[in-house]
Length: 242
Image 1 (cartoon, rainbow, N blue to C red):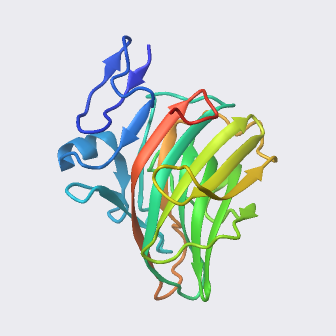
Image 2: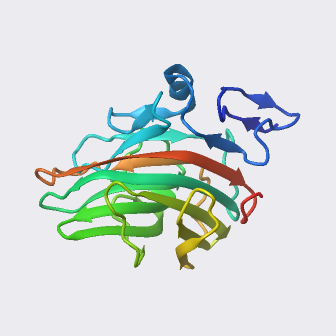
Image 3: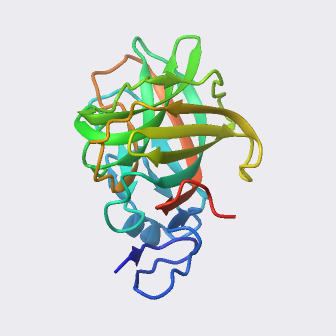
């Protein structure tokens, strides 16, 4: 039986029957009460978490030893190893790099929020990186290695503080994934797409949509924070529902 976790404005689990949030398997606009959001998302640390009354979750990309992360299981189980898709709005509200690069990392992982970015895990991901004079966006994947500073592919497009970035990431086969930037929440106009054809076929058993900082030694006086929202996920397909 498929379980559909609470989406939209109510927290529900449906055993069998129809999905009340069709055609997506999971979505969250972060308009629910804090109690419902806390039941939907598992958190670690304090700086990456859903925020009731804001239509957002807050995220940290601060480089520090504490793991700040949140995760949800969109289908209640392991997703396809060959086909899934998610969308998310990300916005870096403050990006002040320290001595070393800092990252905020998100995507589908085999591990939940309790496992930080510097710990080995299987994951297909996108990230924002901040360092002096640069605001990079990368995408890539891990196969039993840390997800903290993956830069397999770098977008030509940079993020800008205070501006929304609309990301769609798709696992298209066992060994390929795409990450794309769109101009708005309609996902009608593509800005840039990067395709990774070197995903390990053993990057498997992904279950959790996760957002996390780089929990490594301090970068000094770095301050890398932001918000996100409008999360959507669907399993078993490589094109978004209309």
